[in-house]
Amino acid sequence: MNPRHASAAYLSAEDDDPHLVERMREGDDQELGRVYDRWSRAVYALVSQLLRDPDDADDVLEETFYQAWRHAGRYDPSRGAVSTWLLTIARTRALDRIRTRQRLREEPLTPGHDGEDLAERAGRTAVADPSAGPEEQERREHVLAALGTLPPEQRQVVELAYFAGLTQIEIAARTGQPLGTVKTRVRLAGQKLREKLGEYYRGREAR
Amino acid sequence: MTRPLNHDEASEALAAAALDALDGDEQAAVLLHAEACPICGPELAALRDAVANLAAAAPLPEGEIDSRLARARTRLLARVNADHADRPAGAPETAPGVRPLMIARPRGRFSLTPWVSLALAASVAGVAVLLRDRAALERQVAAARDSVGTLAATRAQLAERDSLVHRLTGPETVVVALAANRGPAASALMFWDRGANSWTMFARAVPPPPSGKTYQVWLVTPTAKISAGTFTPSPSGDAVVTATYPLDRDSLRAVAVTEEPAGGVPQPTGQLVMVGQAK
Ligand SMILES: [Zn+2]
Image (cartoon, rainbow over all chains, first blue to last red; front, top):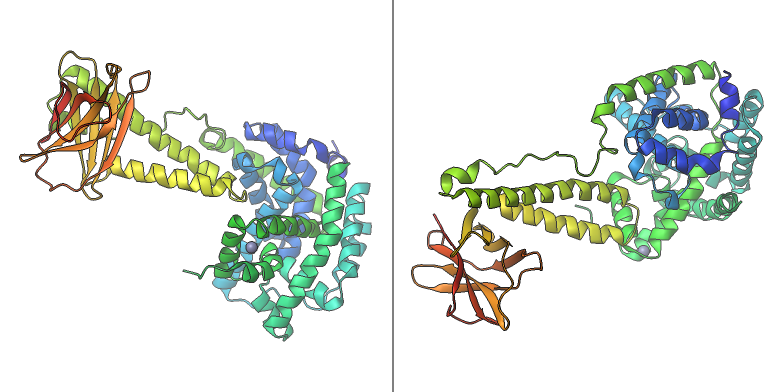
């Protein structure tokens, strides 16, 4: 059994997700395994990006799917894709962990996110990840393209908020920009992403 | 507590809320507004969907990913197997999860004939049903958190149940068991929450009143008989009567139900149907 094979197909089989979660809700562990095989790479990429620590990322990965299994009854297919639901759980857990870590160790806010070109890193890694399926690649390219259409100052606030888990106040402190400016950038970036990715999302669902 | 936000303030902050980039209080205030606002609610949901796509841009970290994923998978499935028995989401709705808390209490406080004990146990089961419903409602609240409209209704229902459970089980609550005046057919329990001045009566096995008549509930004190309302039982003989009436703690002597002309009367005139002495 080649685990790469199982995960490569995860996007093309997305239509089955609600049924998997339905059976998972009934306590079927095998379905949990299937949901995990389909989505663990995407979840792991996100929490690794947020946490910057492999052991923390492992914990949050496990915790995300454990929570999904326990609360499968809360998943409502009419509210969005299974991937959105899982990635939202994952991000919330990772943000909790980041904020606890900051309180416990009083460490500076997630160093290492400044001045990083996410698009460049993502592009490089995508090539290095042969197990990514064609639809996964397509989605990644589409999202990177959408980020690429944002003016650099708007892209920066989105990346600091989404991938580093910073609040607007923390972003203002980090970048030295006035809070009002940061708020305006977040708002404008949100509108543009909604236009670009909202359509993409609906387009995929309609297929 | 945070000040509630108006529409313009919340609308400005929706993108930040979708990114979880607000401080806790402000985040909560925006979500609260969006739950109730027909414009901000859908807008926030759409922004969240768009933002969730960003995850696809996260690069996989370098290193041996597959072995990490496989180890986490093993731990996950072991953990799930370990607490399979404890899983709340899949528990059947009818699970006997609630003990009848009050079943032993009234025995010493009321001298009950066996059939009244049975009626009481049945009503206690009713309270257990209410408590179980509360757990179900809590699950609904969690599931409906994002859903505008249903949430407000579910919350109101939950608050109503909470207040009922409190009225029935609070430390200030006195219970009076009513027995049928003739024959062991009808029975009722009156719960008087002396703190809230609220009265809640559950009646069972009450025959339909004769045509043109109704049942009327009376709070009997040494100086007066006070009407607590009229009722007509359901086809199965059940009825719930609620009233709010302040009464001195020690002045209740009995609770009675009489048969009266439809619409009720200021003072009891008709046949006594059920009665229970207050301690
Ligand atoms: Zn609004």
